[in-house]
Amino acid sequence: MYRYILLLLCFVISNNPLFSQENTEEISSHSDLNVKDTKKEKRAKINLKKISYEKLFVNTDLSILIGSTKFFGDINQDDHLPALEISLTKILSPLFSLQGTYIVGEFTGERSEISDIQHNSMTDPYNQYEGEGDYFVTNYNEIDLQLLLNLSNALPFLSTQKNSNNYTFYLKGGIGINVFNSLNRNLVSDNFIRSYGYKGEQELWSLSEFGKDKKNLIKQSKESVFILGLLAKYEVNNKLSLIFDITKRTGPDRWDAVVNFLDDGKYDNFNFYSLGLSYAIGKKIEKEE
Image 1 (cartoon, rainbow, N blue to C red):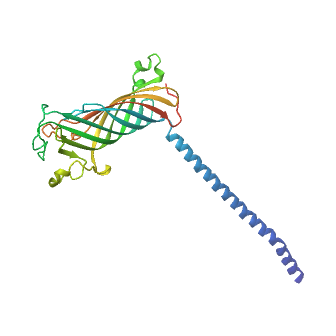
Image 2 (spheres, rainbow, N blue to C red):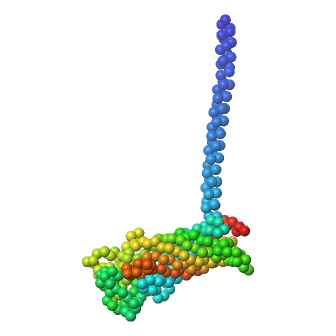
Image 3 (cartoon, rainbow, N blue to C red):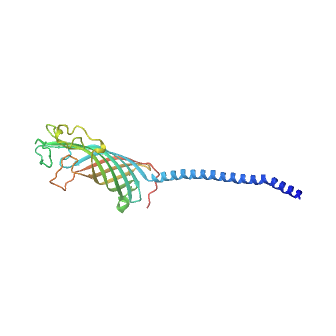
C-alpha cells in the first residue's frame, strides 16, 4: 500500500515542472502577440494619418495675387489702390472647385463742393459738414468662401479651341465677412464728419476725438459681402500657374462712411483686378475627359 502511495507522489512531482513550463510558454506567447498587435496598430495609425493628409491636399492650389481696387459708392474712388489676396483652392470635381480667400486693402475717394452732395440730419447726424466737399479713407480685411465653376469643362467651345489645354476659365461666386474702418472728413479743413470702426463713435461730447484711434480688429465694423467674378488660369507646368482675376464685391452702404438712408436699395461695392501665381501644394490628379 505504501509503495503505491510513494509511486503516485513521485509521478505528480515529476510532471509538475512540465505543467508549469507549458503555462509559462502560453503566457509568453500571449504577451508576444499583444506586443506585436500594438505595433501593428501604431503602424496602422501612422499610415492612416499619412493617407488622410495626402488626400486632403490632392488637387489643392495656394495662390497669391496682387492688384488694385476700384470703389463705387456715395463717394467714388478716384484712383486704383493696391490690395493683396491669398487663397486656397480645392478641386472637387471636373466642374466645381471650392476656394477660401483672405484679402486686405484700402480705398479712398473725394468729392468737391460742386458735386451732388446731400447732407441732412440722417447722413450727417453730428452736423459736421462744412459745405466745401469731403473725402473718405477706408481700410478692410476680408475672409471669403467661393464656389468656382470650370467654364472650360462646362462649355464645349472653350475646350475645343486650339492650345486650350493650358488655359482654364472659371466663373465664381460666394459670400464673405468684411471687417473695416472708414472715416469721412471735410475736404478743406480736414475736420471730422463721420466714422465707423473708430473709438468714441457714439459719444456726442467727444467729437473732437473722433477719427483719431481705430478700434482693434475684432471690434471694428463687420458686414457680409456677396462676391461675383471671373478667373483665368494659365498652366505653366504641373506645379505652377499664372492667374488673372476680376472680382466684384457688394457690401454695406458704410464703406465710405456716408450712409444714404434716402435710398435703401443702394449698396457700396468695389472691383478687385489682380494678377498672381498659383502653386500646387499637393499631388495632382490628371484631368478627366
